[in-house]
Length: 400
Image (cartoon, rainbow, N blue to C red; front, side, top):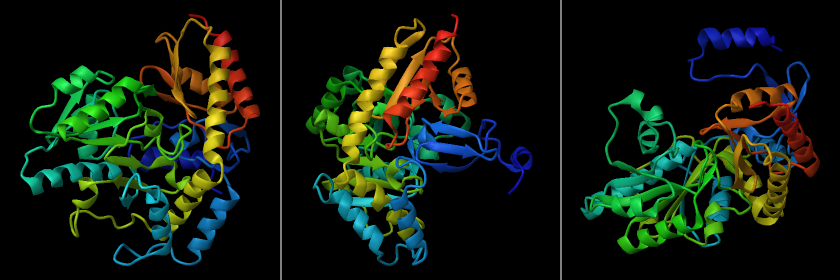
């Protein structure tokens, strides 16, 4: 095995400098525990940025991937493949959405959604090409999706940027209405803004946006790259709000760690793209779909959704009871197994995450000085108790 110092040397000398890495190299995992190259164990409370929903070395996932790799990994979308058909059937059988486009990342799924809006406008001659998105949103890192993202720090260095996007404050329905000019064809929102601090949409806001979109004949696109596929205790986070978007995008947890994403649509949005309008070389390949079938099967039929909901409630209780009393804890928010702890700016979340890593816990950070929690769905109450106890110890020894 390559020496850790050699690994860091290669990264320093030859990798494009786009990542800030912690001083650890993970080699393997089991359940919710990661092991580094030195053999140290870490409880994973971040799930590879909300990706590894089944944890590590899940026997059903490993079996499905291994068996599919022994058959065929890739054949291209010029031909049919069995795992892809099985996955699309699973994702559309409840009737919420009628068609799916499979790709490789959340940004790609959102690109598909954007192209649907533009193609509908082109076909109809309506001129309704503009998409409203929320300030402090995050929709990906391609040129189009980084422009859709309502944060200039992500997009400004890459100007000139494509047109056709306008930004409104999150959770402000009046601003959304006022920004809707005749050129607007769609509203694109997150149910929970992840990158800007795990900030949920209020019930009135998201339901109001849905009703307004229906009234004005706008498409409602919900980016559930982070919140979908069971993360909040329901398969789609929008189910908590009792609404039905025209388009939803999924990625992250969909493949349990294998790259796969999906754009699901209904109505006119589902029918507008034709041969040659869009595509993906690797999207929906048999290996990725075999993995996603395991994840979706466990969520739809294996009782995993119920476990996420119950464990998510327990996590929220533990965070509140142990941490809320500290004056520098400004807010604890989220749904299911996606939670954020916003701290006073005088307490660095990066420093807290570093201390947690030294105590054998992987935890994330995000905007507004927020700790981001997104563990595997199989996290246990005992593991939650241990991690929240460690957080409480750090907080109790923090002077502000």
